[in-house]
Length: 84
Image 1 (cartoon, rainbow, N blue to C red):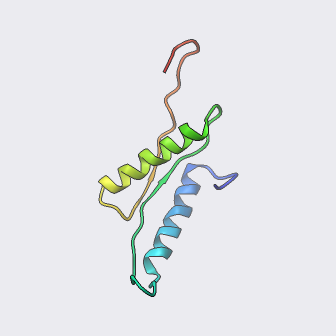
Image 2 (image 1 turned 45 degrees about the vertical axis):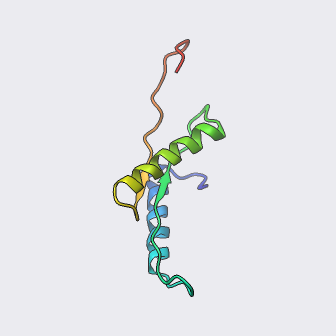
Image 3 (image 1 turned 120 degrees about the vertical axis):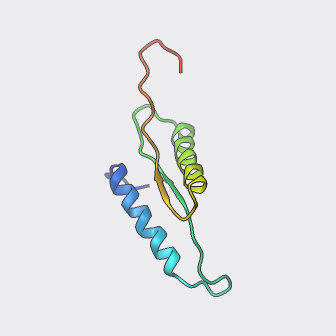
C-alpha cells in the first residue's frame, strides 16, 4: 500500500523492488525473479474489487513473460442504475 501515490508512481516503486529482488543473491536459491500486479484504489472499491484488479494485472505480467510489473486499468465507469 502506497498512500498518496498514483498508478505511475506505484508502478515505479514496484519496478525498483522487482529490480532489487532480482539483484539479490539468496543463500539457498541464489537469484530469483518476481512479477507484480499494481492497481489504485477507486472510490467505491471493496477489498475484493481492489485485489481482483491487482490479481488480473499480476496474471497479465505472468502471461507476458514474467519478471515484470503490470499496472491495472481503472475499472470501467458504470451509469447510475446500471448493474455491472
